[in-house]
Image (cartoon, rainbow, N blue to C red):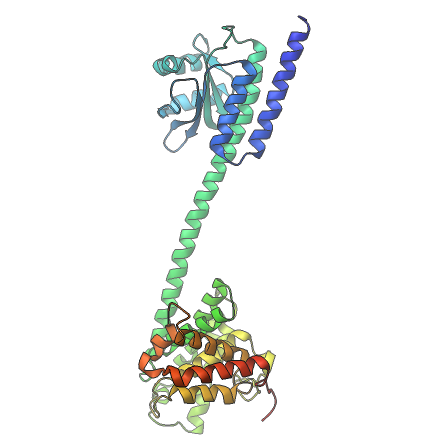
Length: 424
């Protein structure tokens, strides 16, 4: 019986260590992990009191995260001097007691004797990982009144190393989460700055054309609305909005007199104006945009599905989808705003133009999307009537427009208005 007792105690300690290792590895709740770890330490050695504190290196203080039998659920934080931190690191996971002769241990016990007495602590165990203090374990005496044996100290030291690793993992996770949040905030700030810069640049582009101020921003918004209707992700929607804002950036190289001509320009002037898509691409291509299709949208937003557009005469699927979207948004704004040589069309005429040119100038699926978005606003199926706000409520006559939009959408969806690339 006497020979079996040490073996039974050893097996019990090994079992507690296995349970502790599993708890440290598997539990995701830090507070619960620490409470369970403390209970396992106390249970394996028959201790009535104990507490665990996590070290905050920035504030240089110990914050209690678990306590049992010490009279307080979580005692007040314990401040440490730089010298004490160094002493505890040197001690490692070696338990120190009030009668410890080690100078570092004696200094710590002397300074915090009042707290240790109040909590009735008999042993303090630093929790150290790779020469870094991560916490402290405070243990009361055994319920039997027996002193700690060398074997007890070895078990405590081993358990302390497990707990220290658990604390360090938690600290690393918290630090990574903090840095991730800082990076997210920085990214959001940079994204806001980027978009503000893009919108300011779009306004600068439109300032060159006194007749179409606000055109680039409206094209950006229409492009965004179409992309959302197509089910694009938030990042993709942001990208197409930027593409819309910058689609006319090439006009910066076109003579102001041509852009502001209050009449239909001649063939030579038209050829000069038609340089702007390619020029826009040349301006945007060297920039490392977060969205890949921005330069291509500028280059191809005047291409046509039937191949009769410019600058390259692309047909059908040769045209990037983003450019198809910007093309419809650009044309829709051109038709619904006043220009120097013509007034804006009524909405019935605009819808008729979209119908006649679906599959020729415009991609039918894109036309269907802007029509669906407008119809939803007319029918009150959306909280924010963005298209109507840009067009003006007096411009949209529901009784006339809604049936035409519905009919056009149905014809596109049924395939009646299919792409006619290559046909004249």
